[in-house]
Amino acid sequence: MFAFTNTSPAEACVTVLLTSGCDVQAGVYLNSFDPLNITNNYLGDSGDSTSGASPGPQSCSVTVPAGAKFLVSVNEISAGAGCGSY
Image (cartoon, rainbow, N blue to C red; front, side, top):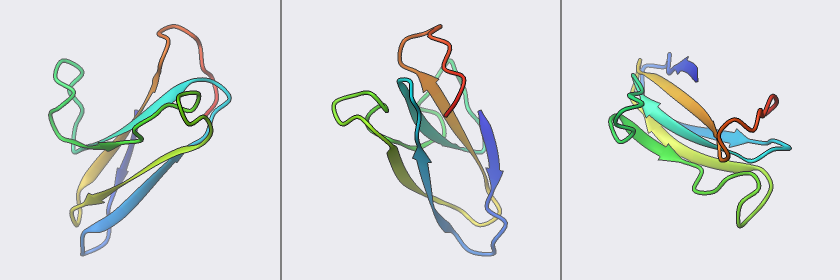
């Protein structure tokens, strides 16, 4: 999980670009992430993994309110695969 803050005085369009040699996917959340309910604070996701139907870099764009924290979650598609770089 990676945390960032929109430090601008206006909402911002943020693009997340994920590149990896293993199979991972990114999701973006506003302010906090609840692993027991992944729909809470959900802003968007890449729609596919880096080795999915359209292999290669995956991206998504979300709108983050002024001054808000947002979190980028990177998840392995096969749990325990050990993806160390992305």
